[in-house]
Image (cartoon, rainbow, N blue to C red):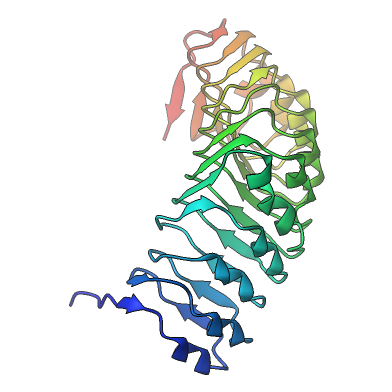
Length: 283
């Protein structure tokens, strides 16, 4: 049986469900504004409106803990009013057409610093451009996932990101980031996955990354990184290491060859390394 797809405008009568905790209206064809009356759903913790049209009035739902706005055709800037969602645990805005072209349109990050319980922030696959503000480092101390991939972000990765000490996953791949990888990344000792591939990053891979001993995935392919591959990466529990298509020189350190967990991907091809026979292991 085919699933039922609802359409039309959302009814203000939903506000009469005073004890509702979860509201999932995803994969429908609703349009028009969210009824302002929904802000009266004081017990609402989870709201999923994917594949619908979402207006900024969503910021009125101050008790939300989980908000999915992904996979829509949302346009315009991200409203700073999302910072009113003080109980927010996860904000997913992936796969939209949301824009940030200047510092003023990045002010939503300042707003989100008021969400002191935020653990997951996923903004991947949008039209976010301009420089990533230093205020990203003022996000919740509980943040574990930060994904900004597949955007048009320029400038450098702020060194201040090293203050987000509980991060376990950082994905800033497929953008226009330049400059050096900040050494402060090594302060994030709880990181498990780092993906900074397909950018314009230059300079050497900071040796401080070796401090992240629990790191299992380091993807830095398709940048302009140079210098030698740090031997201290051998301290990490890497299963994936992809440094392909950079400008690294010298030999792959024996410490890298000795990583027993490195069995999924080891790719250092298309560099200036002496180990020209070392290409890719993918199982």
